[in-house]
Image: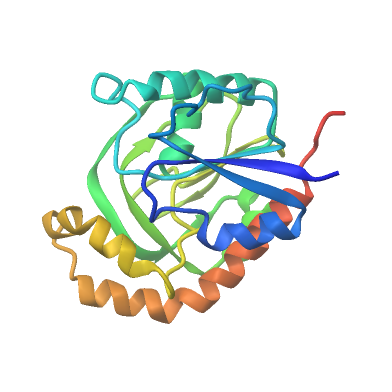
Length: 236
């Protein structure tokens, strides 16, 4: 029987990227729901077999400016409390944290660029193990305190919380493992041009590094997601 994956998206260039292939290979039919869709977060949160919440250039604490955040927070909360398979990337991880009552706040810095992770003991025996020694793409200014019941899987030199899990079915990634940094990365560079300029990032250097690291990142991204999907515990 075909499985469904609902993907919540905020800006079109931040899509599933390298995470698309392992989902399709695992038998999921993918449906995007964009923040501008009239039915965004209005269906049954428990219905999709998998929920993926992507990244975006807003904060989870900006409810007044973006009222859909409050609706989405309740959508995610219902799903996570029911232990339905859920993956959050960057903003998505922060939304899972916020939905569970965790604190999300500005880190006081812009972590943009490539660097390796420090895996925790739990991270080394999880699907994250494929990232040992691999420089991943960071692109965020906010961070979070672990939500109740969560296990920290990784940190960076600048930020303590870079990934967490809640049992086998809930995974939050602060970094952008999904980003296709060889084929479509210029969409990121253009879409976030103002942020890059204000952070003093040299775009040409970031592009060159993305192209160099892209093939390995695509490979490990697929391995991480493939292994995570394989270990999901779905209640009948």
